[in-house]
Image 1 (tube, rainbow, N blue to C red):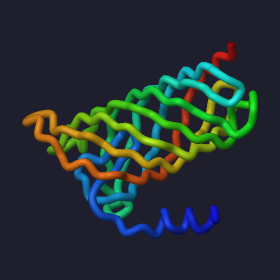
Image 2 (image 1 turned 90 degrees about the vertical axis):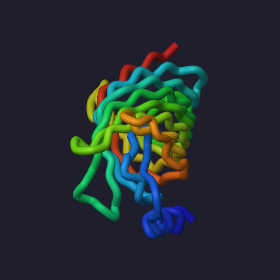
Image 3 (image 1 turned 180 degrees about the vertical axis):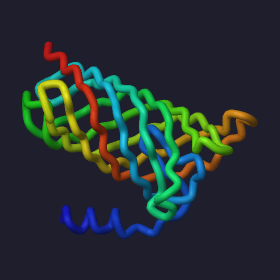
Image 4 (image 1 turned 60 degrees about the vertical axis):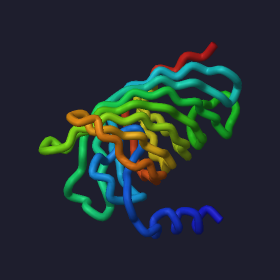
Length: 171
C-alpha cells in the first residue's frame, strides 16, 4: 500500500500550483519540490504529541519547470503526532498553519497564508541538528504584494526536505 501511495504521488499529473509553507508564486502544478533551512522550537505536550514553532528560508519549484525555483521566508506553527512514544523522532504526521513571503527575484513577489498536513520523518544529524524529509498536502491562499491581487486556491502536494536546528523542550 505504501508503494502504491508513493507511486501515485510521483506519477500525478501536474496542473496548477505549488506549496509547503513556502509556495511557488507562478502556480503551474499540483506537484512541487522544496528545500528548506529552518530553526524550530518544539515543546512536548503528551508522550506522542508536540507543538512546534519554526521559521526559516527555503526554495520551492515545479517538477514541470525544475530550473526556475522561487525562494522565500517562512514561519509556522505545527502540531505533531509521533508514532513512537517519548522518542520525538522518526515518523510523524502533522498539521500546520504558516505564512510566507516568496519571490522569483525577477517580477513576482507574493505573500501567502498556508494551512496543510504532512507525513514526515525526523532524523537527528547531531543532538540539535535535524533533517526532515516530508510529503505535504496544503492549500495556499496567496496574494501578489504589489497589486494585492489574490490567486485561485488549489491543493498542492509537495515533496521536500528540511534541515535545521531544533530546540526540543521536554516538560
